[in-house]
Length: 79
Image (cartoon, one colour):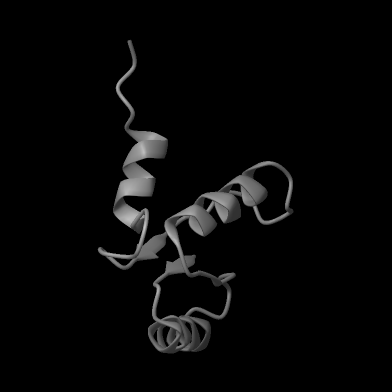
């Protein structure tokens, strides 16, 4: 599970709740859309964690927000 939010307080709250309620899951925090992409790449390219199953993202973050980053990565129209 990846938790993306530019607010450290919100990231900490959500990560703590997820860790307590989903003990079998690995919870990773990211503060920017770019950081989410790097975490996903690391997980997929051999970081030992596999693919993320869930990404919980703040809708609006400075720069590239989580939704824009996700759409850019996975829903780019193919020519």
